Each structure stands twice: as structure tokens, then as C-alpha cells.
Amino acid sequence: MSVNASHPLSRCGALLMTAIMSGLVCAAPGPVLPFFDATTLPAVAAGSEPNPYRNHEARARIVEVGRTVYNQSCAVCHGADATRMGPAPSLRAVGRFCLRITETSLKSRCVADADHYFYKSVMEGKVKLGVTHMPAWRDVLSSEAVWAVRTFLEAPPPAEQKP
Ligand code: HEC
Image 1 (cartoon, rainbow, N blue to C red):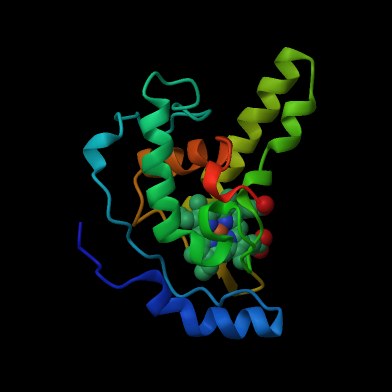
Image 2: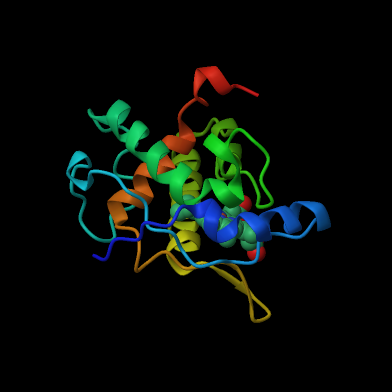
């Protein structure tokens, strides 16, 4: 895997400021490779869904790795620690409504659907009417990294930055 040393803000900062001022989203600058120790994430088989880390014994560590990946690759558009406003939607909301479902099998189907939507959105990106709203991450992030980000987003927001 190639190493990309540029900071997300250096690639997107100017665009982001323009985006915030004009109310538009940050025009997709291309995916930014995060720096993290990939060996800290337990291997998961390709196509593992729903989120294989949700009830993992190493969940606390996975949340921290997910936070690291998120803040390097996603925060520039989706907001620092997913607690601050960004030009793109908050990712903590994805699947949150499932938690209100009381019937167990319906709830797990809802969560599985949300996981699938999350994973697919990230890997394939968001292109609408020929405009790239979010780049595809499939050549940049491993499945492990994507699920770690999802696990981070489901954890309570970092205490020091609760909105
Ligand atoms: C260049 C800006 C940008 C970056 C960087 C970015 N996103 Fe996005 N993302 C967007 C925009 C804009 C949307 C909304 C697009 C739409 O719905 O058409 C979006 C949508 C999503 C969605 C769907 C959300 C929903 O509520 O439907 C997910 C999931 C997502 N992004 C995850 C990620 C993750 C994880 C990362 C980091 C690995 C990331 N994004 C990095 C701009 C970005």
C-alpha cells in the first residue's frame, strides 16, 4: 500500500472553507489514506456483515482505532470526532433509529441493513448525477478499517467533546 503523507486539511481545507461559506459540501478531493497500525485490528473475512466488531471482546481498542481512522479520513467532511458539524451529514445517525425497535428479530434486521448501507456507502462512495459527493474508499480502506470506523461511530461520543 502506498503511503500518502498529505494531511486531509491540506487537500480539502480551502474547498471546505468555501463549502462552509457557500453551504455546499466539500467537493470530493479524493480519499485520504489514514496512518494507523493495521495489526491492532482483528482480521475479518471479506463480506462479514453485520459489523463483526460490534460485540467483539477487543471492542474498546477497536473503537480507538476507528476514531483514529475516522479523524484522518472522514472528519474533514463529516466533522471532528463525529461530534462537530461538518459539511456532510453526521454519521452517528446511520442506523440509530433501529435502537428504538423493541422486537428482537426486526431490530437485528434493521441493524444489519444499516450496516450494509454504511459499508456499501463507504466502499463505493456517493456519486449523484455525475457529481462525486464522497469518493469511494474501496482501494484505500480495508474492511477492518471500515468496520472499526462504524464501531467508533456507535460508541458514546468521546467524553471531553460531548456536544
Ligand atoms: C470529501 C468529503 C467526504 C469525505 C472525506 C467522506 N465523506 Fe462520507 N459523505 C460525504 C457526503 C457529502 C455525503 C452525503 C452524500 C449523499 O448522500 O449524496 C456522505 C455520505 C456518507 C455516508 C452515508 C450517510 C447517510 O446518512 O446516508 C456514509 C456512511 C459515509 N459518508 C461514510 C464516510 C466515511 C466512513 C468516511 C471516511 C472513511 C467518509 N464518509 C468520508 C462526504 C465525504
